[in-house]
Image (cartoon, rainbow, N blue to C red; front, top):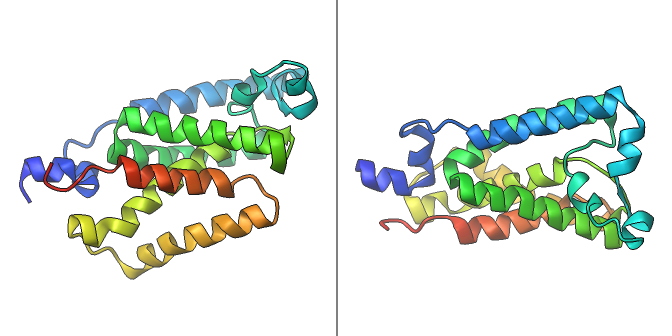
Length: 197
């Protein structure tokens, strides 16, 4: 694979130049700062949480702020930041920064909105953003051999094909992570570079 061809392949992007995940780091730090502020001043959570009744009263900003604060407090903050560090770094290298932004915040906002209107009217957390990235990376794994000629270990392929099934089950049991994951998969298919271009 030539350097130019490798740069057009999501797998080549993982190794060529080892793009530093500055965007992931920036979002990580902002989310960390919000989480620390929330832990230090508990009433802050009530002012920013996704709350359907308050959104109905015109506080639409809560659909955005709900992506930076955590309803599971310290545990939610630590676990969501760990997932962001891992999957955010991979997704930023595979998709680039602009597409990463679309996946992360597009899926997160979609998840916040669907939670507001249907699944879970009160809550907060960046986990729906992260599952959008996971969905996008799932799309990469699903098309790896056909589109890019990369044969991944069977474990990765099994996990990738399990993700949409688990996302549907997640939605059926009325959790709010399945739909953003499925949107991330759809966007992942659309955002992947075509081979040889």
